[in-house]
Each structure stands twice: as C-alpha cells, then as structure tokens.
Image (cartoon, helix red, strand yellow):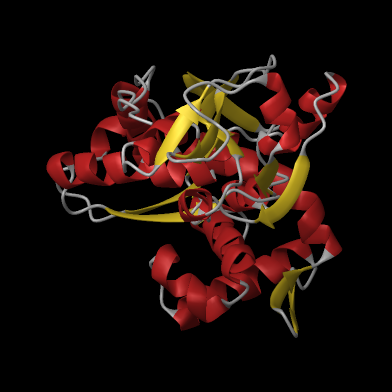
Length: 308
C-alpha cells in the first residue's frame, strides 16, 4: 500500500466518530470485512495500531491523534472541490440534518423551519439537541451540522453568520397582582424570579450585565430549560427575563404579558455556526443558505393587546 486514498481518511474519521468498525459501515459504504482490511493496511502503513479497543469503544492512539489536523485538511481539500454544491438536491435527498439549538430557537425558530422543510424538501429529516459545552466537539466530529443561537465558546475553527438581533423582555402572568402594563425599576428589583441556567448561551452573560448595573434580583426558581417557563410564570407571581421573541410567543397564549425591562440590558446576535471541515460540504452549504433566506432579520411576532 504505497499511496493513501480519500476512503482511507474517511474510514479513520468514521471509526473515530462512532468508536466502532461495525457502526462505521453505514456511512463509509464498505462492508465490515473491507473496512477491517483497509484498517489493517493503514496500521501497516503508519507502523501503529491507530485504534485500540477500550471500555468506551475504539479509541485513537497518540499517533493518530497527532495526525487529525492533517487528515482533516486532506478531507476538506479532496472531498469538496468547486462546483460540488450543485450535486445536492434537497427535493430528492433523504439526508438527516442534526442541529444544535438554543432553548429559544427550539421554541420559536425550529417549528417554522420544520414547516418550511416539509414544503421545500419533504424527504429531508431533521433532529435537534440543546446547545451545550460539548456542541463544538459535535460540530467538529460531524455529529451536528449546524448550531443556532448565541454560543459563547464557538470561536477558533468555526464559521459564524448573523441571522437576527434579539433583546430581552420581562414576562409576568397577565393578572399579576402588582405588575400592570409597565414595570417599574422598584418592581423589577423587588419581585421574585424564575431563571434559566444555560452556561453555553447568552444567559451566562445576562446576570453579569445586571449586576454591573446594581440590579440584583431575587432568584427563587432555577430551571435548565425554557420549555416549562411559560407555565411557571402563568401559574405564579414570579417574573422571568426571556428573549423578546419568546416573550411575544408566550404572550400570544393570553396568560402572560411581555414588558420592557426598566434597566439597560444588551441586545445580542443570534447566529448559525458550523465547523470549517464542513464549510463546503454540499448539504451543509444548502442548509445554511436556506436558513439565511428564511430567517435573516425575521421580524418579532406581533405583540398581543393587554387588557389588565
């Protein structure tokens, strides 16, 4: 085996991603015996085991770990020549896209995206997971195609593209006994709050900004997801700070009102992120452009009329 082929690099990357020769079969397009034979040739070529079996599956050796940067460059150069984007046909493809989404994106953007894909690419499949501290590694490994939200840790090795600008509002139940159509600074500081704990998102910066302004709140409830926040606020006298897009969406249900925060709070950009390995991958290119076409500067939902 005097020369390496693109398939050899793909085999190594799939075994790394799946931690299994058997699981790599689905994406490499070779049988398990063929993959095992190719891996044997690669081990002989490099004079190294490359992968060893552990309790957590096939793990790369230190030598193979040191080769990943060069292998990634080779895959990027050889896999995605100019003009390949035209080979992806969204109307015919049954590809599964995997997205890392902030809580708000799951509740406001994701349902719209699903409806759009059903119309324009009905055979595509889509999966969503929450943004986390591991999102970057998942994007790098190809286990996620895109991440959408405000991610504080996706910098080196990642591309990013602004979709829209968002700001925060304060939400309260519609018939709150002390908070009417406007929120005073005194009320803002004296009421109890439900708070989202999401270290990998813009929420990690929100408390810091408020504290710098001397706006110390009383946090009575902490949750790890916004999915139940609307019911918490509608059923109690607690307040919560949420992105305006979510606040308007929750207020449309008729049980919650969205109010302007009476202290300066920063706005932020919602972006889509992807790893440079997949910058020119045809499906990834199409999905990114599709999202930009439909979500760039998407307006806020109309504010409902408040009667109390």
